[in-house]
Amino acid sequence: MELSEVIQKYGVPDKLIVGKLPKGGIQLDFVGHADVTKMLIEIDPEWTWEPCGYTEDGLPAYRVENGMAHMAGWLTLCGVRRLGIGSVMHNKPDLLKELVSDFIRNAAMRFGVCLSLWTKQEWEDVAPSSPSKPAPVRDANPKVSADNIARFKKACADAGLDPEQVADNAGVSLDDLHESDMPKLRSSFADLKEFASAPEPAFASTTEAVAAVIDMFGGEEVQPSIDNHPAGGKPQIKDPGGSPSTKQLGMIRALGKGKELFNDDLIQAVSAFIGRDITKLDDLTKGEASTAIEALQK
Image 1 (tube, rainbow, N blue to C red):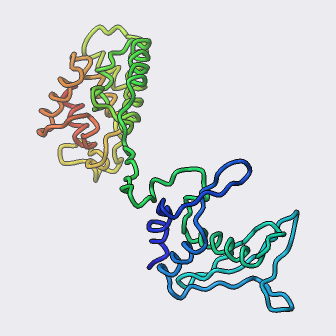
Image 2: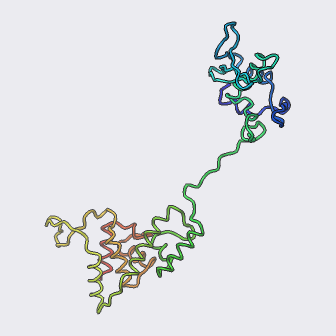
Image 3: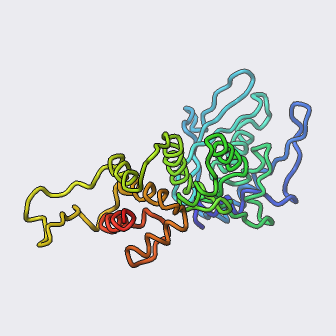
């Protein structure tokens, strides 16, 4: 038998071999050394024990403290050696025999034999009659609590924002919001709050409004070398397949607002400009963002 199996088979003893021992005014459950010895033989027929020391007469050594006799020894089971202590009243008539008996019970407990009798708790998880209980599985990405969603909606109301619009802009759903969605939702809230709090300038014409948007978000950096310009003289965007910059995304949203395009309508319009369907502006490449900006400026 493997030692790892001992506690499963012998950790909780059969009730038929459990006796009662009066101690300190209460009744303690115990199993006699003979039954424990039988269990040790079943586990390992070659089990052995030896005291930690011997007297001059060759008997197991023990010491007496505060009226109690104590004998330390080693129990070897399945090739593993562990320390145990036997303790009884020093005036017992068969002192050595009782010390050995108590030692066997104590040392066997170190291997899991009758371990349930040494604790006040019930060991249902090691009882032979109790099926093993699987450990609860924790959700690695739990849903956001209703209280947190309510706090988010209040923050939106205080900032004059539509919570559904903020969620749409983040590409998430408030009806199925998980903890992994929160960074995107916070970022969307911060962006829209900043945009909503900016002073609304008065423009005399659409051309003037577009010029103001371009000035606000700035243009994309281009290579100064003439080699970077195609034959038509149009500058090329650096890393067109990379992610769009914050300036590009801000410019798309601002230009879309000027054309009264919000959320899904803006996504649909940008999809048409670039020739492929996207679900959120973050799906764009830098080159596609530049194409969308150019289309929205017309």
